[in-house]
Length: 80
Image (cartoon, helix red, strand yellow):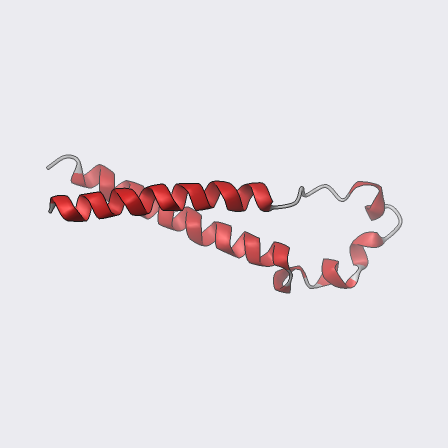
């Protein structure tokens, strides 16, 4: 049982580091002055789900779910 806890803790640290890096890689949500001139309607603005930014958002969601699940499992396991 101790080996599982150590494995979960190592996985938790990896998820935390990956989540931090992915969040820092994302662009800001403000469009700046480009939104006034209509630059937000470009090809990449319409297909954000297929772009690098869309992939980072999806990866962030997956890592957040993993973070919550692993932290809950580690917390429940600490009561034994």
